[in-house]
Length: 255
Image 1 (tube, rainbow, N blue to C red):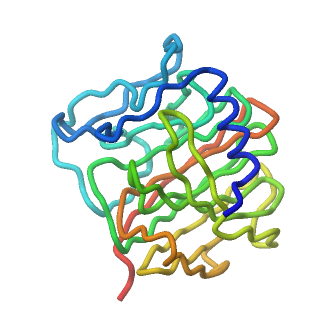
Image 2: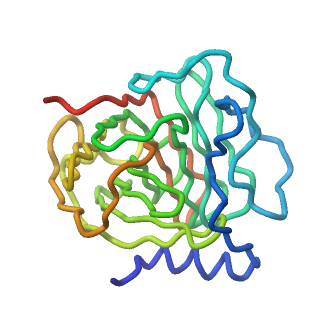
């Protein structure tokens, strides 16, 4: 299957920086440590070797399986991963929003909910592109360190796509197009607040934009049965990019 062009750019860039290969037993979600709370990352020096996770603090309470997070308190349970660049990402909360900032071109930033894995699940979010274009924002389901994940992205130019992502090594991901959807009038222009949703149920992904079904896609051939969920933001040739997520909802699919 043909690789997405931007994925090739990430692979070339990472090879030039001699990124170490991810060992089979390595997990981005350690199981022997307490559930984490994300600590602020702005102002920290960049590490010469990309880290799988940022700094965490223990969570004092159990974390829910299904929830709505309006980002007005703790980020307990969320893990930040990055592809395409080994700089420390800028991730903060402000005005009850989760802010993902990308200061390097052709970079993918992921905020994943670490405590739970889901087979059938629906994830929805409201977001706004605050700075920089072109850029994209999206949702993740069935994330697995070794098997890969699905992501639904909408771009500031009014287009969308569905990708299958998989780590080649720490910080280096390969992206294969599941479906390049082209343009849709449902997608709002850059700077406008909008909602998107991703229903992963059985072998079908259902995509939503502003509470309207965009399309349904069969993904049986990829063999992903379950995994973690999250959000993503991507930069292309222009930076900085700032995507503000107003809220995210994770729920069981309606019967």
